[in-house]
Image (cartoon, rainbow, N blue to C red; front, side, top):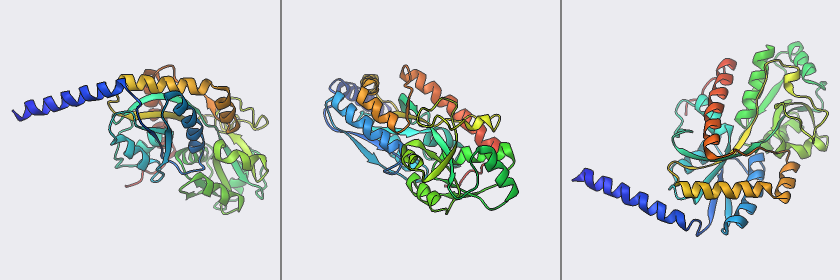
Length: 321
């Protein structure tokens, strides 16, 4: 009898969600960002949220839940009700790198989320303090070899960490890692020479790069980047290097298909808007949406395997948490 009641409850709950999906959305939608205000993902989320709210007819409110390498925000959404009113805009940090960096991760990037769409890629730039006498990736490698133990690098996210560690692994150099809670903090310390090397996202770092406060020497991706046309990909110097930071939107697991489709359609419409495209371009963001949620789900699985390969080969130690 208890089993019957349990199945009945599950059935009624599923019916209730499907009925609610037909009138979705009827109230505010929360878009959780697992990074601090001022980060690249935060800036992208705020641009997207404004337009999505206009399309869906309900406000989309950005809620920053930073901490623990995006774990806090990801866990929050993973445990939310799958009704479409709590969504997650995140990156490879929570869904590609964390499974390999933390032994006791409290969410499953695949099982605990419903992929909606990839939005695009946020380029990262290898930058150095202006006082460091290097103007290229090769000069950085040469300087690090000639001055062992003198360089430190900032890591407020997985892209900064894995990029730098992969470069060190492939070129046999050594630098000291300095962890940070947010990108703006690391950038401030790079300018102040508390750290000498930092792989920064263009969303939070482009203004300082253009103002000449830090020196860019290499791009993490291999796609052309119009805002920094004279900065070559790291791969031109470091053979075998290939890494991009992707950005996408998820819901909790078991999000009803009508809601997934409606949110996906709103995102696709938003990123076609000329004003949205202009604002994203100013951040250096490359709009590369998935064709459909199924394609995004496959991409997430492939990226998790690829980041695992990079982290394992670089010998990055997993953290106990």
